[in-house]
Length: 238
Image (cartoon, rainbow, N blue to C red; front, side, top):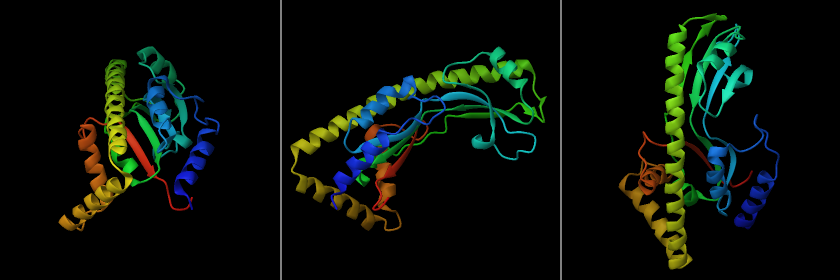
């Protein structure tokens, strides 16, 4: 089976499907990043979110914050105002949670080495309960304080998206130069020898972990300054 042809077919299939997100389109702040990835033959995106501030009501009987079972009181991909949150909170019947969620990007990769420059994660988020059984548990002053923090995180998130885009673009350009400068046989031999060498040094570490560590070095982004990226390797059979 020609795996490259299968991956291209799978990519065309997925990218031709309708956008089933609540918004129905790619967020403005992440459009260029999504286009950059989809423009490369070895990647395609399956979902994305540039970052958002949301207010969820998990209901009276809810025990966990599960978005699929929640009432969405407020969602915005831009900085929000205290009055918007106060108005939305009046609709809460259970335990309302104010959240900030950073960039999330799900990417399918053709093979393991293609995922090398994408396996990064982040903890740049916020989640605070505001009501219990419909009763407001905090003051408006505290809500205003939380919104300022959420808005600051939103602005920082935009900077991180731009920084990640620039680093990714640089890494892809570097990869293209390498691919055109060396014969495919040499590149394959080099990749295999790198992975084998890593296993000999520490057989308990999988090659996949080596890839993640190599990625952080490649993009020059540390663990505390990364967007949330989820990578899926093209499976043997799907």
